[in-house]
Amino acid sequence: MIVCLDSAAIIGAFRSRKTESLEAWLEKQEGVITCDVVRAEIRSGILGTSNQETRDLQESWYQDTFAVIPSRQMDRPLCEQAAILAGAARRNGYQARIDDALVAAAAKAAGAIVATANVKHFEQFGVEAVNPLKAD
Image 1 (tube, rainbow, N blue to C red):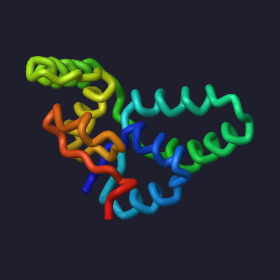
Image 2: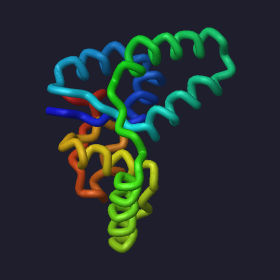
Image 3: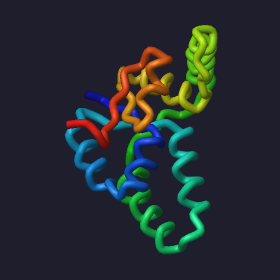
Image 4: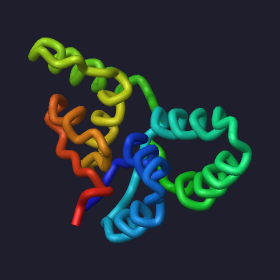
């Protein structure tokens, strides 16, 4: 399957020290993409880390692993699709976040499922999601 990697999966892997587990899971997939909003979330988190040793380790992982993953640009059609998804979710009583809607729209455009630690965040958009840190 093709997966669209969400920031929650990466953050969860960093926090639980399971980046190797995440990498192994990603290698088993047919294809892996992400989107620009996830790239910005991860990059800003790494650059904002005050502990130099942790920042260096995360930066190394970013350059070696994440930076090479293709990224869906946040263009107007993708943003419009995210707005449609978020609006529909809100009409159905969800607290839809636009960053999650952007990831969902990128996944839909690529025919991918979302790899995230927050599976429930994506159910509201009608997008299949899986937690790679808990997947078999």
